[in-house]
Image 1 (cartoon, rainbow, N blue to C red):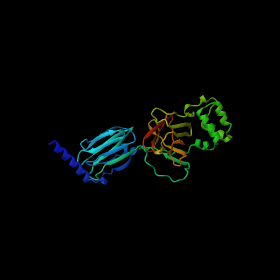
Image 2: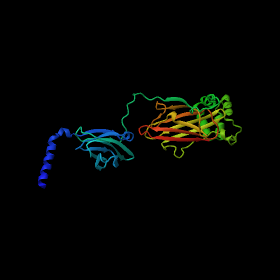
Image 3: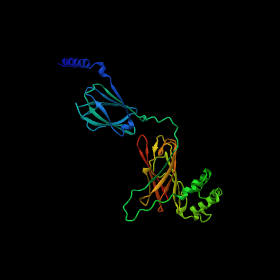
Image 4: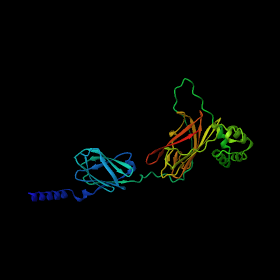
Amino acid sequence: MRRALQVLALAAAVAGALAYPQGHARAQTVRLYLQRLAQRPAEILLVPGFLTILEFEDAVNAVATGNPGIVELVDVSGGTVMLRPRAGSGSTDIVVSVADVRALFRARIASQPRTTHKYVVTSSAPPEPEEKPQPPRPATQVGTRAPAPQPSPTPAAQPAPASEWDAFVNTLSPQQKALLLALMRDLSLGRLFEFLQTLSPQQRETFLRLARFRGLDPSSMPPQQRPALPQHAQAGSGPDWLDWQVAATRTPSGTVVQYTLSNTGQRTVLTDLLRLRVTAGGSELKFSVARVNPSGYAGRINPGEAESGTITLHQDPGGEVTLEWRVVEVGSGATYTLTRTIR
């Protein structure tokens, strides 16, 4: 009896080989991208009698499915996963953990085409459309953001006029601006006199009126009128490859924040003005932004580049002011929250 069963099994295997010519055994190969699979599942086919192969560049850590009655895990070796269907129809999800990414798939049982299906998953980012072969030109953007209007019985306040401090800074030469920035970082008598000697009589009068220096001792200045030093990264405020340097000047005519945002990482980041919030005491403040970006696209900082700009507060109630900017990494879609505080 056993001999007869072996003969029947061999005959069935030969009949199956004759029923499906060699041309039907050619595997169908589809290329997928790991970063896209982490955000949206891709459909893979399971055909009864054939294997479905998933190939990754890195070793597979784990494989999971929502319905083990639909799909069978045949083997996991290195970066290769082999699957086959357990039923004649149906669909379920499959999650494959590779490195730090969870790749998402939607497995569907199909009767055609009757062949092995192979899916090659590439870790590199998908190709981006080629840009026009033109050298990038620095992009300049000016925008204003105001909090959502709140119902109030009193009329809304009129927008504050343009900052007088900005008008003063625009009259300075590059050398004078460098001296002013050095003075803001290190408020000392030596730097003060060095800066004042470069100013014209009209500039000197404007500067002293705006800064309200009462004497030669910088410590005699009221705290709310002292130039703020650059704020360094705070805990949880973003990755170390995003360096957001801010220097604030608070005067009776307004508060001006000069900033530089440097990208020393490997990916492009987006700095959308709609994601920038300035708050004081839990309330949002209205502000204007003027910025320059060397990439040619305002709000897009490529690796190795930096964006510089000026944030002008239309109103400043005094005390602590918090700047919060949520920037987005191109490719992965990761969001990083950068926070700086002005006191």
